Length: 564
Image 1 (cartoon, rainbow, N blue to C red):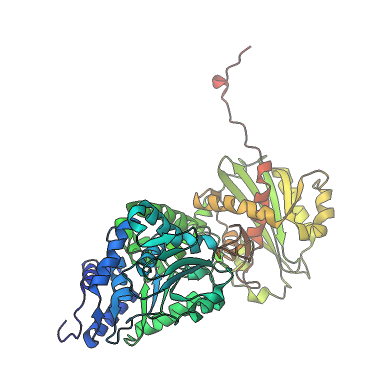
Image 2 (spheres, one colour; image 1 turned 30 degrees about the vertical axis):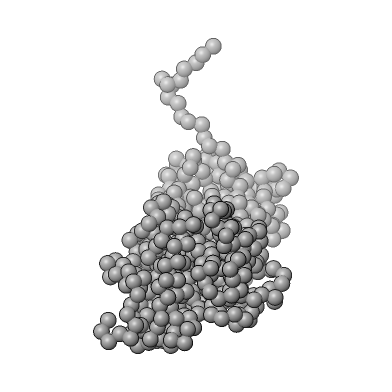
């Protein structure tokens, strides 16, 4: 760089050369940060402690990292070894935001070991690692302790360690881990705080406790490490907003290093070469690439159940409260033709009934299973006097002309219409069981009993949320494997598209911020204009599909062999 007040150090040149060689592997924020760094070195007089840098990098071999990857050397040099003219760190806050598997936890352990080592001259430069759960908080301590144990003879000269704490003998600096709910956070005296997976924090309370303890030692630093997460409007969202603001403005006065690795757009997930944008270590991890390929296939087939790929691997923000039931191409694949009605005569099936109000929509789904394949005949009734009718964003009148729905011009949908439909179906098929939401049972109990379906007969099943949780993975597999045969039924596809997957519990584990049990229920994406009853009738019918017996194979007389 011409007229440069501070020449670019080797660790920066090396990283920029990598960017120039493979520009498609770096996201927009990486290039914005580069512009800022180039400007800072061009216009400011900085001191690069190259000796300390080499010592810090050299410690990587004890952790099994060798000299590390380019991005690790780049950040180590900038954050830990670059100083202003007055001797203070040029950057005293860093965000390391990259996809899962990149090596963030390893870098925390590496930096922790470096900062409590004799190579850091600041006395009592404590390293306090914080995380949402205890296991995560103690992981760097455990990793460093294991490294010291492997080289115990040499390391006992410089460190002493217990299960909970590692101390640098020369400076008295301590490495400890603190979980979100740890006691004694108010007594911290850190030189640096390093908080892991901050996506799990819902508010700034704990982070502020860590931050407020800084300033008791020279060179105070803050380091934040994370993937993307599902918490909405939390500290990570605030930090990313600030990062984007400073990066876009090319704010060279900032003391923050915003190291962001992510896809620029969700569509880029379909190009394997662009996965490097979210994970700069990927080029060195072929096993991880294989894992990502498998997770990508799962995500493409069923994005609702495999959201971690796009969110935590590719760092694309997602709201887990509203997820699509299946990918659009998988939904369209349900248009497989149903068998000829004459061929289905006598087939066993189940019936699912769903409605929110008899003054709105009601639906029945007849569900058949032959081996792995599923066949569904779905019909809905629409109350023409519904207060929500004007809100509908669908061609329901055209559907009525096609016989897919029945528009009922009455104050409510008479239950007798449903009983008549089931009666006609019973002449054609063998209905093994009827499933209905527990809350709707009372309205139809007498009518269903008149047809021979009752709790006493054990062929009438009340559908509970736990039943739906159990059947969600089965429905998901039917979509992903394209096992559904719905014929040309846009009503059922429309209702499915109106449905969202929602976590079965809104509470989260105190130690991870993830879903408590990983189970899902189905909910409405919009309560008035987008109805879900036809799809929920299908869900109900599948709750009891195990009552359908697979038919015995047909045998030709010539193939039959009798033995006595």
